[in-house]
Length: 186
Image 1: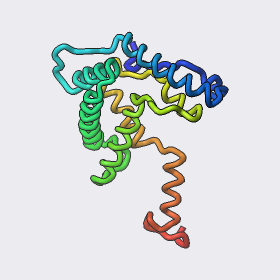
Image 2: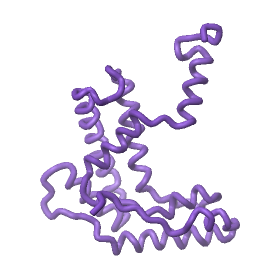
Image 3: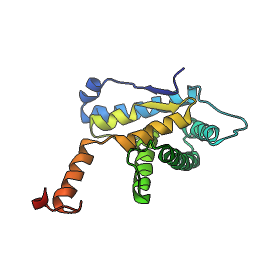
Image 4: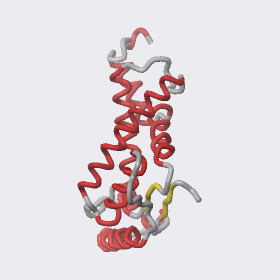
């Protein structure tokens, strides 16, 4: 059984073919289907949670089944704490990429990992204006069992994956002199 579940309602082509009026109808329909999906999903739940992973799964259960915003906050707090623990463990084992991460770098990594993981849970409740927004609504996503593995994947993404935007931003900082070099030194 996989650790994560992810599903979609429509293909990318179907989403792009919708006009504005139909998108508004599709968004409302997708939000209803999403809520119905989570109400019927067999989400993991522990009567007496014994560790942070089980507590995370219980908060996930409350958030996805009942749209409980307090559960969302608690789930986020547990995830944030676990990200720090996982990062420190990776640093002790020498698996954090750089030899030494500054406190500021550590905070950036944890923040990026947190955003990367937690945004998957958030439905966009505003009426979407484009197909990309619709894709975010139509995803069904939850952790089935391995919370630390799930969070570690987010941490690896934050440590090692660079988006095109990150690369452009780094080059821009370098050329503007913020990176310690001026343009004539390059």
